[in-house]
Structures are given as C-alpha cells and as structure tokens.
Length: 586
Image 1 (cartoon, helix red, strand yellow):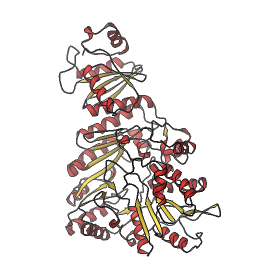
Image 2 (cartoon, one colour; image 1 turned 90 degrees about the horizontal axis):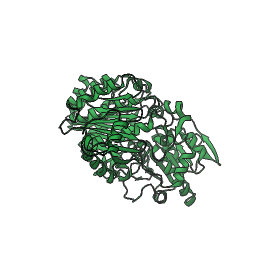
Image 3 (cartoon, helix red, strand yellow; image 1 turned 45 degrees about the vertical axis):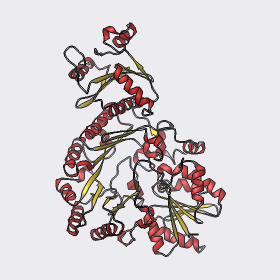
C-alpha cells in the first residue's frame, strides 16, 4: 500500500478532452522526488453510470492509502463532503485531507463545521504536503506546519498561512507519465496568481493577490521536455493572467521562435493588455488561441464588476484578435448581475451572437456566487436557491443530461439552466442548510429575472433554428432581437409605438407582410408559462426540438393561427388584434 493517495475529484466530462489538473500533478512530483510512495487517482478518468452517486464515490475513495489527499473545486465539493462522512464511518482510520480551490476559499468554515474532515491544505501546497506526509508517517505533531487547518484531540487548530513560493522553477515538472496521454490535454504555467480584483472572481483571493513568475528559459526548457518526452505538439498556457507583463511575453515569444520548437499554444488574455505588436509576435511564435473574459456588453455592468475597459474597446480588440488567431478566439459572458437591467442583458446576448456569427467562440453563463468574492460579500443576504436555476459553473459536468441544457450553434454555447442534478437528498439538504459554504449553487435576484429566462429561451431557439429576427410581446414590454441590435421597449413609454415601428418596420414589406427570405422574422407572445407562436412552420419546428429535450424552460407551446389574418378563426383574430399591440399579416 502507498504512503499517500492523491485523488483529483473532478467529475467526468462527456464532451471535452480532460484538461490536466496541474496542481495535483505538481504535488505528485514533489512527493515522488522526496522518496514518498505516492498513488494518483483521477475521478474524471472513470466510466461510472452515475458518477454523482454517493456510494460510488465512497467506494472509489475507499480504495486508497491511510492518508487520503483529495483535491476538488467548488462544483464537486458538496458531493465530496457527503461521501467523506460515509468514508470515515467505513474507514475511521483514514486521514482525510482536502485541498484545491474549492476548500481553500472556505477552509475555516469547512474545518469547523464537519468533524470528519481531518485537515485542509490552503493555497499552494507543494511544500506543505511533503511536511504533512512525513509528519503523519512518523506520527509527529503537526502544530509547526504552516498552511494547514487540522483537528487535534477533537479541536480545530489553525496554523499560520504559508508564504507563497517565490521560486516556482525549483519545483519538479508535473509528471505526465502517470496519465493516459490520449485523453488528456497538456497544460503548462509560466506564473501563478492574479493581481486584478474582479468582483465576481475569487482567484485573486486564493493567490493572495500576488503573482509569482517563472524564468523564461525554464519555461522554454519545460516545453521542449514535454514535446520530446511525451510527444506533445500543442498545449495551453494556464496562467490566470498570462499577459500582465508585455515585455515578458515578447521575450517568451522571441526565445520560443529562436529555439524552433514548433509548438502550438493557447492562453488567457485581457482586453486592456493586448495590442497589435503583442498579438503579432504571439501568432508568429505559434499561438493559435486566446480566451477573453469580456463578461458583459454594458458600460455600467463592466464598471460595477471592476473591469478596466469599455464594451467598445473590448469589441474592437476581440475582432482585431481574429486577424492573428483566426478560429482560436473565445469570449465569455456572464448574465444575472443584480444591477443588470433588461437592456443590459439584451446587449450581452446581441454581442455574443455577433461574435458567433463572425467565427468567434462565445459562451454565456449565469452569474455564479463564489465565496470570498466582493459581489458575494455585498449580496450574501440576498441569496436564493432553486433546484431548477443553478449556475452551470457550480455544476459537475458529468452527464449528457446536463449537456443538453446547453445551446451549441456555430461558435455559441449558452449554459443557462440546470436540471435537478441533486438526486441525493442529503447533498441537496447540505447545500440548503449551508448557503455560506455553498453560495455557488444559489443565485441573486436580477431585475426581471423571469422575463430574462423567457427571452433566453427564445434566444436559444433562435440559435438552434438559425432564426435571425424575433419580436417578443410581453404584457408590459416588447423585446426585438433583430438587425444590428436587440431592443427593449416598455409599453408605458410615450414613444412606444414610434420606437416599435422604427425597429420592426425594416423587417416588413410595404403591405406589412413578412419579406420572403430565409431569415423571416417571427412574432411570439409570452403569457405566463405559455409560448404562443404566430407561425405554423416555426410552431412545428419548436415542437420538434422540444420533443428532443432541447428546451429547458417549462412552458407549453400554443399556436395562434396558421394562415393569413383574415382566414383565421375569430378567436385567433381577437387574440392577435387585442393581445398583441403590434401585429403583422403572415
């Protein structure tokens, strides 16, 4: 039996290639270097029918050494905690250590709340895990080891935080030899930490708002090693902020070209840190992909989340990036902020669709309330839980059941709803009883939330059916998703009719009938949970995708008429004329 078992408790993803967890690979390498017999297990590389079943997790954890170090993120933490409780009942002699970004951000609450957790390692743990393992194997005291919270005689002991590792190059390379290289995507770091303070993100807090850098020559040497030893031809530079130092990035590109390694790579970027010179040199050095966190398309929302750029600047930069990275540009968006109105929301949808139409990958997520973020601290007393509205970033990506709640069309991915994944009542109860530990499963009220969900549903339908123009008539307002902008018009506005005609008349012929084209506009009427479609063809197409389980929101579909207005029955004429303030002949 090994001295210690390292377990990566991320869950399997049925769609993507497994992204390497560099943190736990570093821990494996330092333990091995110290002569400690270490076993590595990756839960993502499993084929269980239901990876979230607690008994399955318990059995998987049971086959381990006496010292079990479990790494997990926020999206698996609740299931892991319940499983650990039963693991300790089954194997009381095992020493359970938690680590990773999930436990680190709420370490004090976890260690105090759950008696079956023996220890939590905080932040960088390469030095910590060696000291802890040697002490446990020799039955020595843990009081002097920095960077841990632990139990001693039933009481919680909180040791001092460990200083950040200044020289990252002294660490041995992550050991890719323990992985099935056919199913893992390689990664490398050039630095650790993030100096920025986005209100929705806790990465800076995890790294104590400090960045440490590796030497460029050491990075180049590792890339050559990974290519020569493992045959990697492409990899991701996984720094949270690769571009914080322009001259450093230029030096990296120059040396990478000079060594003629011929490797393809991608990285995370920032709107306010890139320019033509930098992107040009990166492309020449083999960079084929860049990921931007734009997050919103409204000035006030970007300002509130502490971004340092405007939507106009962001769009210009992202479109310019395509010149250098072609098919490799990706942008993320977040909706559901408490200060986001309907027009802000529509702006975000429009820009994401605009990018997708221009061959730029875009993804949209519901705001996830991670602990230790500024927005969580500000709105922690306003958390709301719904098993049918859970931020997708809080969910384990483990089954096709979840994947079907994503709209994938061209380059656009919309993740906005959640099925009832908490089949285990104990996990669900744990989350509901501890919002301060699991805020990521909650949402905060955003203005017109129910209406935004209905708009999002129709936005998904637009993407799936390749429809370019939709007019949605609500009780108190109208949403137009068409042309070069998405517009929100309240019926109480004095210029309501004029604005409506201004934005919609361009879609019609002179006789107010739809133009004969592949991108005909469609008119919807939202009434409670009913979606009324004023078009027979679209009605049938929506029924088809609904029957395939591709619509998440629980509305029913009705139809108002199938022929021209004058040929419809009186009830349909009444509906259209009296319920739809602005209607068209079909």
